[in-house]
Image 1 (cartoon, rainbow, N blue to C red):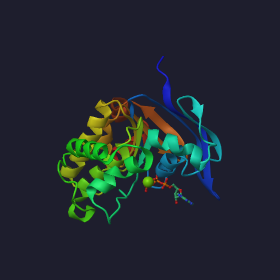
Image 2: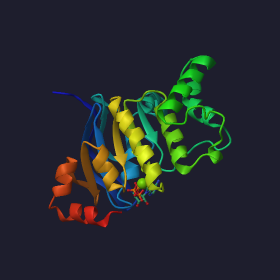
Image 3: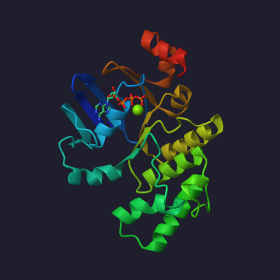
Image 4: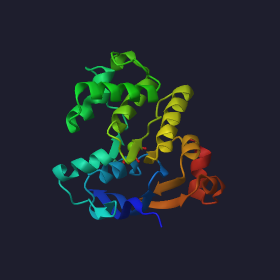
Length: 244
Ligand SMILES: Nc1ncnc2c1ncn2[C@@H]1O[C@H](COP(=O)(O)OP(=O)(O)OP(=O)(O)O)[C@@H](O)[C@H]1O
Ligand SMILES: [Mg+2]
């Protein structure tokens, strides 16, 4: 049987009195794409941040390649954060530097590649995101959709095994949404696994192998997009009908 790339076991997390996760468990296999849905404030972003240790869970286990990582220190987590890339909810480009420097940053930070090697890698990446030759542009010269794609390019320049996407299509018009989703599709075809947090149900259905619904601290649905659409679970139905 294929082994899990990532496994969450019985995760509990609260902020003071505010119980966020009350026994969340899930698995992610190599190349698999998982859509994580849930109302606003249900703890989707906190779950992604917990996976890479930006939040500390109160109880439970996080396994990457069968190895527990939830207790590791910041320094010990660095190699895992390269393998599991987190694409922030709000894009987070460096405004004062150009597209090249934004995408190249992790390569300068974490590799010993020469400047020419980095230039080649960034140029290849720009081709992949349909921004060939745009190295010199500043973030302010780009549309919202282009900025998202540059942010995603930076997230994947170190060849992660998993990308954690936090609402990559939020605030985009339909054309830019389609561009971002088709980029996610290309990355999926390269065998990169992902967890896709979104309110955009149709993109999740299009892209994901499985849909997970988080509700009141627990996962109340975990099945294929087809079963999701046919589910008679009232919470799932409310979701499908709300088209948030
Ligand atoms: N650092 C923090 N300290 C205290 N409370 C927090 C912190 N981060 C998140 N929360 C709370 O945890 C809950 C879950 O937040 P989270 O950002 O994960 O929601 P979400 O599901 O991503 O929502 P949205 O769909 O609006 O992005 C919210 O009630 C939020 O206020
Ligand atoms: Mg969020």
